Image: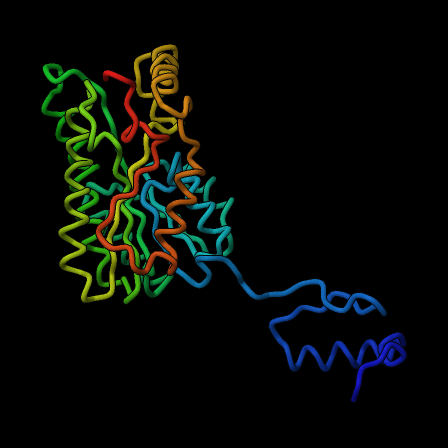
Length: 298
């Protein structure tokens, strides 16, 4: 039957039209049938990450939070982990149905085992991991204690290392592993001796894992932000000192500002998507030019 204006613009015609299309196109939702507008909504999920299951560690704040929300916007089903149950649940409420929030300390292997057991039960598999959980303390070299050293190494290197190792059984061919590194891995900034050394370590870890995992169709890359406006600066003693450090970072950056976490998230979307299928073992700088550009005579 040909559907003409006269067929549709009657109560019986509209009902017959809706019934037929619901059978032929179950992916479409017909909200109303008029003489001029036939389709106004669709159930089809679209986006660069549609159909992908992705874990984000440290997904309840800063870059991780922005990335969780952007991945969700791009159609991914997102699992996040972190230490603060309150911010985990608050973040989960901003994500789509089927998202997952798990309290886990990435430096604790028992926590990692529990988390991946939960993800396997709820998701079945993973298509990507954004290894983003981190911890920083900024101290002069001679003031770094064993306790401070161990905590920074445990989260930033040990945590990254074993998160990837324990995710492997769930990662399908074509999966993407992204590790948050830092421009600090390439810069000799004072007071960053522990955290920057960890970031240099994960850069090289990504290259080694790329060599080991490429035949399994798993690519590993690092994302190296410059100074980014996150709550990390609240760790400086006193709010005024944190703001003072941010002012210095803004004025010394060639772009005269810090990064917004959403800018980092948008690059992470590319690395998590199939658009980056040929990108293996690379480090992506997103730093406003601080690594590439120096003042004359500097």
